[in-house]
Image (cartoon, rainbow, N blue to C red; front, side):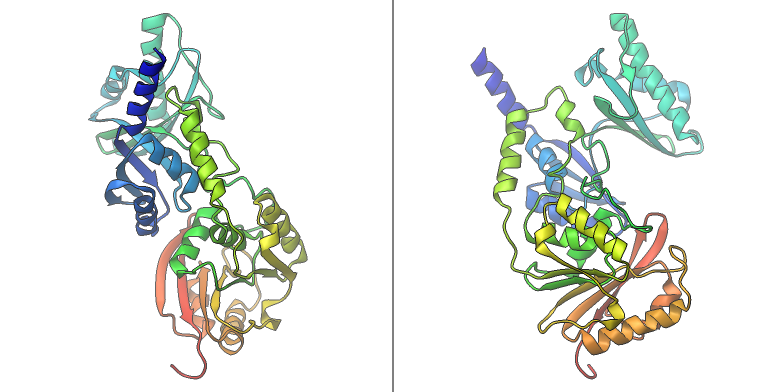
Length: 390
């Protein structure tokens, strides 16, 4: 029997299935590259997501290692439903005992873009009833709902009449790295920070500077990249509660990832005018295991200069939607002046939701990227800093 069980586990591990990985707007190609490097096949770029084929091993690796993924889903059903009764019936037709035990808990996350199903919570309720009723008819009992920490999290996406049902292997969004317990007033999302760093093309060897570090997210993500630390190493994932969870495979993947951690040679700098922000950034970096890899200072960017050499400056300066700042356009102009005269040889990347203020940097951007910081539409501008005129 043991040999049969091991053979079954091996087949399960090798089995290929569809995986849909969610990401932020503008990061689709970054995520596709990550997935390709992790071994994904049949990669298809979607809107804020990538569809690919892969094994159980790939599913685990994406959750642990991807820096731009937000959520990793395994589709189990796709169908059309023209009304709530058909939605209920189609969901009830799925054999939920394959994924869920009667003594386990579940939760449903629903998103709807439909005139028929215009209330996501009501759609989730109909799906919940269908699952509960199936169990009650078969066993006389039903699994309980737990919205905080369920054994199985089910993702329902409805576009017009098309319904997609998937299992959520991540649980909490993957931007919740579990190191950032202290936050400034306007923290930047961890996945957004990581994606921007990947966009810069930083090689992990040259200088990396965040002169307005806030709670330290840019510097911490850069340090984790340079030292090859897995972004998910401090958290748990929903797939660890699945009935087919392979603990031995998971230990192997984690051990290989941890063995790959190294000490980078690059200098990573995180400064801020606010001493309290610097203190929080230090604490967050320590929790991420990279506190010793970052040089922190309570310093005004407008009074700094770069060290000799080249590198990357990344900053998320204040803007009107986020923080009130007197003379915002003058401040942005001073940022541009400081970069031009004191950071020669660097590439500067600035993200801001104040598109008007960005124009006052006074430098010509060589690249502009549209991104979202939460619900705020932003622009990421790249400035190549060189001596004299180009």
